[in-house]
Structure formats: structure tokens, C-alpha cells
Image 1 (cartoon, helix red, strand yellow):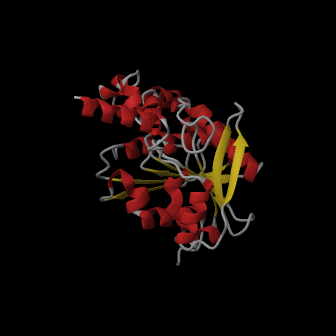
Image 2 (cartoon, one colour):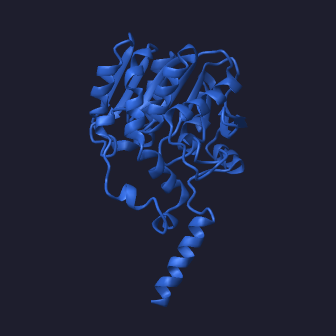
Image 3 (tube, one colour):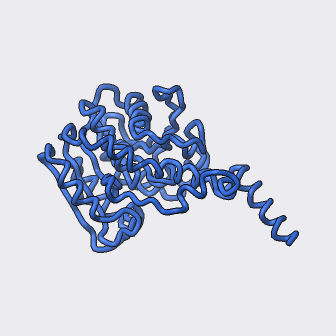
Length: 289
């Protein structure tokens, strides 16, 4: 009994001390990129959003004149979800890449403090865009919950949106499930047993259905090119989200949809070449390697 109590105490201390954070420091970023053969040096940014919160991001590019692609991670997660893309030795020569830590995650100010509003999440992305490409149109790629974030960006800042790439994106409010444990793990003491990144994830996913419903009348504002990539066997975000995309993106003249036979929810990593190709196809880059 004492052993169990001791181990439980150690676990709580480790969790509350910030272990299991799912985030990568600037030094670790630099080391990881070099190990993967990326000759370009990353540039790290801390940009204040409209609430004064410092949004942390990492930028890799061969030239500032290239089109900007903003990479927005899911939940839980951080900018390092896109390590493979920033480490790609060919991609940054064709596209200017920036991956950011969404509010509540990574090294953005307020780690562990969830931002439940998709409008505020999109505003945080906009702060980074304004820093790197003020008054310019940019491309955005969002994985999972990053999908509705970039969709909200296109709704709120259409004049700065060149196009969207939705990867396994959760955009249909009718498909948002509410398992019993979502409410159970929010209050203490169960909250103390979860790593901050996981509790933050639960806290932002729980109200996601309502946030998506707020977006329902705004889909007509999305007129930029949109690419949708999803896997049939996605067990976390159903492929039926693709049908929803077809229904609401009526103002999009250039809608490209690719449904993969496998890859589950993790196509960002295990179908990397497919996502990479989708980037080149969407932005018009050289598809050859």
C-alpha cells in the first residue's frame, strides 16, 4: 500500500513538474534538425497575439521571398509535430515554413492553460503571420484540431489566406463525440494525474462541438483553394468529415480531396510523402525530388 502511495506521489510530482510535456526546446530543435541533415538554421520567434500572449514559433526557409506555409498542430501536440517537414532538405527551398506552438502547448506563453476559442486560436496564428508576412497571403496546413483553427483563420482573415490544406481535420460538429471521461478528468484529483499537455487537450476538445457550430454560418467566407487529405480508417477523426467539407465549401472553386485507404489519424507522419505531395500540388511547387 505504501509502495503504491509512493509511486502515485512520484507520478503526480513528475507530472506537475512538467514532465511528459510533448514539447521541444529551441536547442533541441536545432540539434534535431542538424541530425536529420537540415543545413538551414532555424529562426525562433516569440510574437504577442491580441491578448498579449507570446506565441512561440520556428521558421525554416532558404529565402524570405518564398511563399509562406504555416503549420498548425493538433491536440495534444506542439510545433515539433512538423519536425519532418522542417527537416526536409528540399521542401524549405520551395516553401517558407513556420510551425507554431498553439496556445496552451509547447513554448507558447501559458503552457497548460487551454485556449478554448477557435477565434482566439486563429488570432494567435494571425499574429505569427503578421510578423513574417504582413499584408500578404499565406498558405496554412492544419492537422486534426489544427484543421478548424486554420479554417477559422480563412474565415476571419480571408484577405491573407492563399489556401488551406486540411489533414485529418475535425470540422464537422455532428461528429464530435463526448466520452464520459472528458468531464471526469477535468477536476482534481484526476487532473493532477494527467500531464499538462493531455489535460489541456481535453479542456479544448470538450467545447469543440460548440466552437464548430459557431463557424457554421461562416463557411461561405472560405473561397480560397482547399486541399483535404484524410484516411478511411481514421479512428479518431472520422473520414465523414470529408463529406462535411464537400457540403460547406460551396464557395471554393478549387477543392481537392484525397482519401487514403490507410494511415489512420496519423497520416501527417506515416503517410508523409502523401502530405508532402499535397503541399507541392496545392502551392504549385516542383513535385520532383
